[in-house]
Length: 215
Ligand SMILES: Nc1ncnc2c1ncn2[C@@H]1O[C@H](COP(=O)(O)OP(=O)(O)O)[C@@H](O)[C@H]1O
Ligand SMILES: [Mg+2]
View 1 (tube, helix red, strand yellow):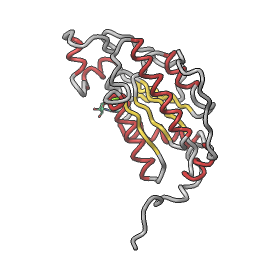
View 2 (cartoon, rainbow, N blue to C red; view 1 turned 180 degrees about the vertical axis):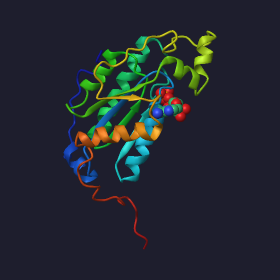
View 3 (cartoon, rainbow, N blue to C red; view 1 turned 90 degrees about the vertical axis):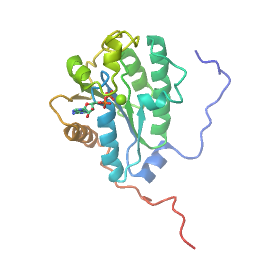
């Protein structure tokens, strides 16, 4: 529910196109989804590193990090998860408007919330990437020991154990993180962005901007 009906969007003189031109890239959101431990954070950060090293303006919004601050007031009921994703989708859309390539790493278990996130972006700027790994593999990885705790009943609403996960039906990219290694998965994401023309524009005009010259 919008409790701020009397606000008017303030537009400045600069547009997303201006910022994209300066950044030498097309801004977009790459939305990773998948079970816990399916590889969302790992692949998103590998892609971020590669793009950063190429001089791209790129940023990862990661589930655990966002819950330290912006969404620290939210738990894991479906209602709270939806609110979590709603906020993240809004932030991702703002960063995209700022000319940034945004990578998001959230379980985002429901098709409806991923579709809501997609609706916040201009067409062709949202790429849903499904990190696909069997529950058994994810549970074995158990990077943070959460599956073990969920199985013991110490964590409620844990995706894959006691909370649902709806796999994407038509993602822009399906990454099989069991057969691929991390580098291969990251490369597949970069190839997807290249094929979509996101990375075809020239490099940033001012890669060193913001550095004061020595007197
Ligand atoms: N192809 C792959 N892509 C991503 N992660 C992989 C891959 N193969 C093995 N892994 C391992 O799986 C784990 C995934 O953990 P993480 O990225 O934190 O998952 P998530 O963010 O989805 O919860 C990491 O320990 C990573 O090294
Ligand atoms: Mg993660």
